[in-house]
Image (cartoon, rainbow, N blue to C red; front, side, top):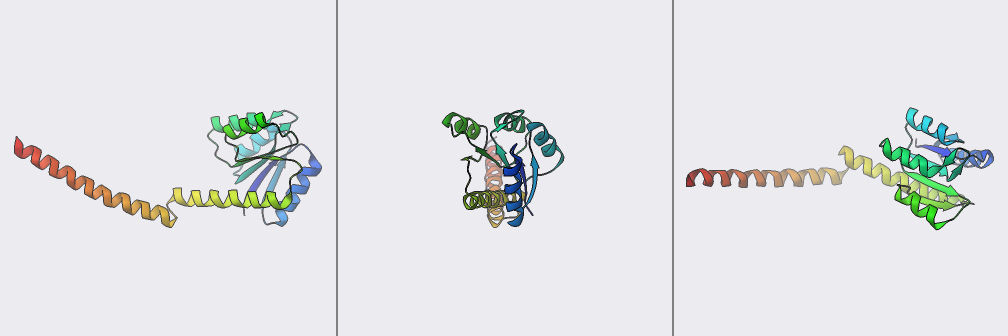
Length: 163
């Protein structure tokens, strides 16, 4: 079951998204501040973060910076009432996957979350070597490695013969 951290200071909105995602088969945790978000990220593993841009104790861009400094690699979606281009560009440069303007359409949000989680699963399989593509790449690399070492041996052989 996928776990989503919801960082939202509007408790009603946070709970409604949380309840809706739980009905869709996901596990959620809700926090209302950046401080609580940092604590949650440090204590648990999350598959996705869904965050409001402006929170009582700061801006989600500072959380993205902190995550980059601490090497946390969790897909990050920003939601906001403030659809400013500068904010969108900044958050995307810091690693946010997408920038959504409220009100968010539930079906569009679910489609986006599903797409991100599926992509993340595929990437994790690849990096763990569980995907067919990873096995194929490994076989290709191994095959080329054998050829490379054979050529290297021949080069050394002829180098020794010349001297």
